[in-house]
Structures are given as structure tokens and as C-alpha cells.
Length: 388
Length: 207
Image 1 (cartoon, each protein chain N blue to C red):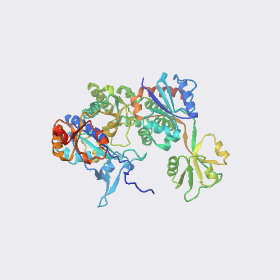
Image 2: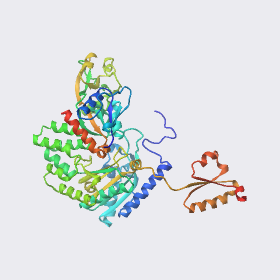
Image 3: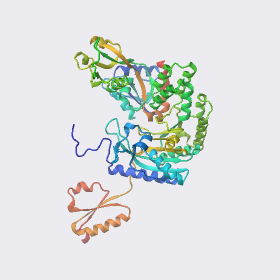
Image 4: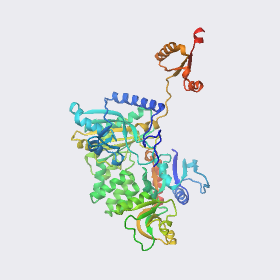
């Protein structure tokens, strides 16, 4: 065993340096303003939750949870996502006061990383949740808000792909012989293993019409422009009609160009009961965010009012955003020992002009030349100045 | 047309896959000079190849520095990277098997398994409920049973000649392997038209 060095942090934990902090702060401010203007109220939940409640209900794999034990012997988790704690908070209190309920958050979540030590195990997430509205309008609002939020950050090249758990389950059940086959195909889709899907379909030895339909489905369904293209696989049902009206609402909002449908989209958690979507942007190799309807999770917390929402990873958002030049000016006032008050007064005047002013005694500087280089402007306050 | 970056393993698979792309109608030069090059630009098709170690291809693709790539199923199973597996190219077909000295039984307490694929081996023995000790080696795996380091090896078998030449026999066939076309999840969406086009055209060549 090698001993831990003094500067080391636990695997996946990161310091935030000033430049990143400012960038993050700017994103948070812009995001908060945007979401508040749309009627979302911000909430905060505790960092620690019980494993048996939030930990187990969460969509995050068990192996990714940071677990610890409290003084009573209960297992606790560092919150791995925000949807589950907010669902707890909404079902236990807020829904009794207001329904439907629109909540939003900016929060850090914790997920232990299995691969490559440097990947963040703690990161910021931003998101919204709408509780207590089961209409298609709530889902449309979530998707439209996600798109407009991304646009609000100035991202031009991005894509939302939408699927529906009900439609997919219907297709998988209709064209397979039993539930084991259907769930095997579903987990291959969660892994995005299209090759494995085809191999499995062939190995099932299904009647030709069924296997042909599944093979054609896997070829087409991941990238379809209109809902009509999927209709030949499904007998008319509510889920399909739902997706039709959702597509229609997005079209009315004039956002169709950002949206594609993928009916192979599937989550390993079965609490996604309706539509679900993923958000991608150019500039990051990893998805920016995801969302969907999770009536099933609410059910676990004893409520049947339904919920839908999305979350965006702020660290990936920062990666995608171009660096914006701050227009705040930094000023250093370097003063001689006797001129302390004069320096303070000068600093206060400059601060009222919106400048970021550092007051520094000259005697306290080790390397003056290096110090002044990081400022936009440097002012000296000394005896001689006064005389001039 | 958007620029597309393709990660390819060096060597024979590159040549075979490259030929498939030519057969699929891509306008690529017949001969590529790739002695020590790590990147090949094809401006006519707006394609850039990056040449990597086979084990590294899924890493490039997962991080999105390559939009798509060609990787062996063995590598995909071993690394479990988050990539989309789009198409079985059916080239460099082989399989993973366990092998050992003829007429030997595995040590009863904790047989030792030497392999280049510790995750695949671990998962396989876990599934059949066998308690084993995995020894990771980087090459010449066949040596391990011969000199008594391991009871079994888990390795790629294509013709079986290497096993035979080293006096080993195959015991269990674990899984089939061939080269797959994989894609980065974001590229798959952002460059979906280009990637779909490649998949459709290659699919015709495969079948």
C-alpha cells in the first residue's frame, strides 16, 4: 500500500478553481433566471439520504452509490441524483400545498466511478420536475424547457431524441414469445447493443413474421423523423396517440428541427413509464442530459399524481459552452505603508464603478512584477503621488 | 457534409475494414501508406482515420474524439465502454475459449486462470459458479499452463494452431468474436445521417 500524499483527494473529487467557479456561477445565474421566469421554484435537499429510501429508489446503479453508516447503524448514501430526493420532498409535503407543482434545482450529486480515476464522482446538475400533471402538455413543457434552456446558454448545435417506454414494451411483447425474451431484448437496448439485439432475435427462433418485424424495427426505429413511421409496428394504442400529440405540440412550438424520435430508447430503471428523452450537444462526447416521465417512481413514494422532468449535467454544459470573456475589470492598488487609508478610499471609489479592486501593501509583496501582471490595471498610492 | 473521424485498429483488421469501405463505394485511395502514420486524412470523403491499438479503439470512441470505430467484440466485452454497437462486420472472426494441458482437471480449491481478458474470464467463471484466481498476462498466454503458472488459459482462438503447437487443448468455448462497428452516443445523434449512411452501405457488403 502506498500512503496518501498530503495534496491528494478521494478518487473522482475535484477542486474548483476561480475560472471554473465564475463560469459555473454565470451558468447558474442564467439558468436560475430562465427557470424562475417559467414558474419553477428552486429547492434544496440534504446531501445525505437513507439508502433504504432514496438510495434504493434512485435510478443510479447500486455500485455507484457512496454509502456510509450513521450512529444508529442505518446505511446512508450521498445523494446520487436529484429526482429521487425531490420526489420525496414533493410527495411528503409540497404536493399537499400546491398541485401541479413545478420545482427546479442546481445541486451537486455523487456517483462513484468504476473507470479511470479522474472522472468526476461529484458534479453539478441542473433540472426541473413537474409533479401532478399527467397530460401531454406537462411532457411537452419539459422538453420545450430543456430545448430553450440549452438555447438560452447560446448552444446552437444540439439534439433531443425522444422515445416511449410504453410503445417499446408493446412492440417487444407483441413480437416475442415470452417475457424472458422481451426483457432480454430490452436490456440489450439499454446497452445500445444493436448487434446483440439482432443475434438474440435470430437465436429465439421466432416465427418469420415476428423476427422480420423485430429486425426491421431495430434498423429503423432508432432514427425516425415522424411518429407515422413507427405505427406499422404497433396496434393503435394510447401510448402511440400520446406520442403523436407530443410530436404535434413540439411542432407547434416550432422546435421540431431539434427533435428526433428513437423508439429503441430504453432505461435500465422500470420507473420510466412514459416518454423519455436524451439531450446531446456538439462539443462533448457524453450526453448533456436526459429526462422523462417517471410516474413509477412517484408510485414508490405512495403517490399517483404522476411526474415528469429532466436533468442536465453542468460540468458537460461547461465543456460545450464557449469561454465567455468577462467584462469586469480587475484593478490592483499597491500602497506604501503610510497610505493605507488613501488606498482604501480609492478602492471604494473604483468599486462603485463596478471594478474588482484588490488592495495590497507593497511591503507584503515578494515578487511585485509577477503580481501586477494578472491585473488589467495597476495603481500605485505613495507619498510622491500626493505631492505631484 | 460533416467531418467524420473513424478509429481503426492497426494491422490486418484495418486492411480488411478499409477494403470493405472501398467495396461499399467510398472514394478512398487503393493504397494507403501507413508505415508509421497515426492519422490518415481522406478529404474527398471528409473522413479521417485514426490508427490505434485495438484495445484503445473503444476508449477513443467513448470520449467522442472518434465518432465511430472498429473494435473486436473481445475488446468490447472486456472494457465495457459506453458505446453503441451498430454492426457486425463479420471480419476477423474467432472465439474466446478456455484451454489447458490435455486430460487435466482444474485444481479443486481455486484453479488459476491466466488471461489477457480478466473481466471476461472472471464473468465466465462467476456465471458457471466456479471459484477461480485470475492471473492477468499481456501475451504468450499459452506459456502459463506449460510452466505450471495456471490450470487454464482464457484466450482468443482463431484456427487453434497456436494451442496445438504448444500442446494445449480447448476445453470450453466461451463466446464468439468478430469486429464490430461502434459509435459514440453523441456522434450517433449529431452526425446521424452520415453514420446511418455508412451502416447501410456496409451492411450490404457484410451480407
